[in-house]
Length: 55
Image 1 (cartoon, rainbow, N blue to C red):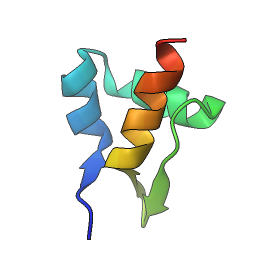
Image 2 (cartoon, rainbow, N blue to C red):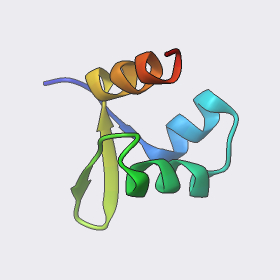
Image 3 (spheres, rainbow, N blue to C red):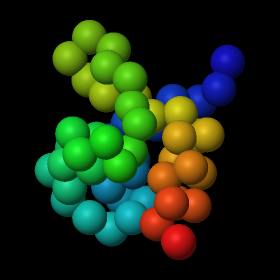
C-alpha cells in the first residue's frame, strides 16, 4: 500500500498554510480522498499536482 500524506505534511512540503491545501483540494487542483474527517493524498496525486503546476 502506498503512503498517504496528510494536509499538514503537504503544507510543510510546500511551505504554505494548511488552509491553502484545503483550498487546492476544494478547487480540484489537488486530488485527495477523505478518510473519516481527514483528507489523505496519494503520492501519485502529489506528482500529478506538481506536474500540472509546471505547465
